[in-house]
Length: 554
Image (cartoon, rainbow, N blue to C red):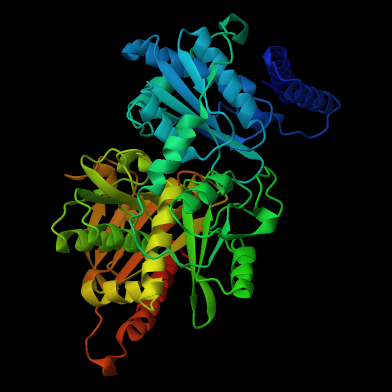
């Protein structure tokens, strides 16, 4: 096949796609690309038609635009039809599906398309009344007794992206084999014109929203409420929900970062709308310094994650996800929460020690709340990427609103005692040792180098890292007694240190998750927690240096 023939076929595929596309904007976008390609100008048509946006355990997520390798109305309609076929084939014909959406570009449009396909397939479609947080959708699935739920969101991805997250009737995200079975049905969806479309479904009443707000507010017990708070929703949909929950729970209104207060799909004040990214929290911490705040809290754009910043001797600092996870576990255990405490394998080992000390079971899962939310008897679950499940009875997913409220409650209790969250972290370190975590991410331009790197590490694992002997190497692709197989390696090092290496599920990276454990002596002359922190930083830096040179040749 000549290059010209290949280009001609590509143009014909693009024209066929445009003929089926119900969206005027993406049809015009594709038409302009076809004309440019016809003139011999370079275009990204080949990438747009290089394949189909893959449906997996996270549903769909990708850049907006025309073509099968983008997020658009054609791709979403096919996904909805495939989901409807899966639900019908698994005994849920005639059941109900609830659909939520955030404030990103086209989220409301994709939600409406999904509702029309569901009603056309004989399902009842309930559509959330407005842009609302993802955890509220997860709550509504169980409250309404639905067979499934769909949330149109790309969470904290860049503004040009959107996504499509699917839950089943237990309120948890899909896991294998459901993802593959849905994908197989999407693949055989015929022409869009042949798909029956019904009406746009029925709007969910505000009473569901009110029940969620009351349920979350009810997680906070009686206690101190004196807390000066700065909050940012990072241009997302969490602002109104958080304000109402805090008010109901008895807290004063927070100082809100004005520039980021209202939903804006372009996220104009941040390079990347993820509170973990450098600079994303700068405006909030600046406001905190000016207002004499006790605490900074933030949500990502769909409010399923919660970030926390605290004052220290050098200004304001972000708490790591593992630190917030430990604080929430400490708070819940102190209040008598019973059941299984769970975290992902890339999160700190500290939670297991805290649970054991309180006589509660602990479980490790694969990365992602699709696994954490399915833990039997779950009492609390978290992952280091700022995701926390504090009320699994009602929301079996990460919930940045309930986590935020409980962090505020704990901070207010500490303030009433003349203490702060860092003092509680010091208490935990004294009891269990200082558990310090860090990450190393290595980006690859050539995706083929990622599996090659993993195979090389499997063939020749390091014998020491950062001066600590590698005592055990586990190939997680073989699975363990507790975990199903996943592409990853776990190195257990001397003195309780640990490294996990795995390819990123969303970016062309290999990620390394590091943890060291440093005992905290009781003798004041030993320097206490501060000395342990300094030692931990040195150990983490040494492990990172060895990983860069020995594992990645960087």
